[in-house]
Image 1 (cartoon, rainbow, N blue to C red):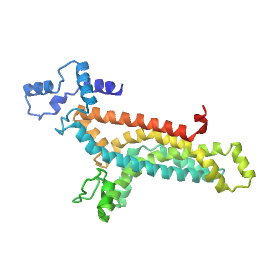
Image 2 (image 1 turned 90 degrees about the vertical axis):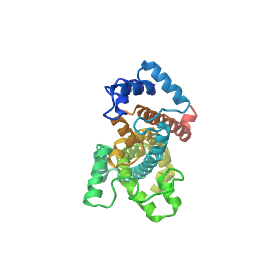
Image 3 (image 1 turned 60 degrees about the vertical axis):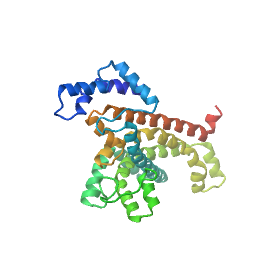
Image 4 (image 1 turned 120 degrees about the vertical axis):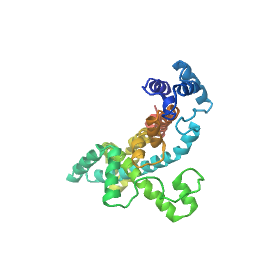
Length: 317
């Protein structure tokens, strides 16, 4: 359904991909020949059938802008986005879990209210605005982090896995590892801090609800300490909504890289998607939209499976 909707939407846009893939000096005859070569002169349902047949065979067409296979182009950029999203997710979970536990520990005090107000304020800031603020703060006013690319100029890492951080570690070169970490730090912080307040609030609310259950009272009557109750009894039950949240929001985090990658000139799928939209590179737009959709569906399914495994009540029906 997503491929049909995206395909139709792209075909009714007031742009001519054939003309945009040719130099400005191209003649009308050359444009018409290009349209015929791209199949744009056929009915839209035939165009979709041709695309779908190729997609099922692993052929997503050829990029009109980069003059190369769309699959090869996407696979070249995909590791950078995966690396960014996974790093941001780890950062968000660490910050969110720590924040949720700290605010819960301060329950009933002014610090709890202040913490919830701060998380609400940060939650209101979109990731691209956080990215711009981080560039201003840590790239201009206090220039401690680079604000574009993935490595310092002149540095190269032999590609073994496609993931720069892993390849940098495999080289054993500390300067390259440090450069890779410095370049990814601000994008990770921008994406991670945009997501972490939600984790804070969900964990805090879940812990409040968990502490109202009878087994917590029984644990107190048995003389267990507050730390034993929190980490031995409450947290393993309260964390279930957080697990579901992380799984269901991973796809959104994946798609949220679009503007952040553009701001930091990070060579991933989001950056590629923006440039493909600027040049009406239809095959690339279709491929990335398909990846975003598949990622969301896959991780939603994983979240459902983990909820089933972690919650005995779901297994019991």
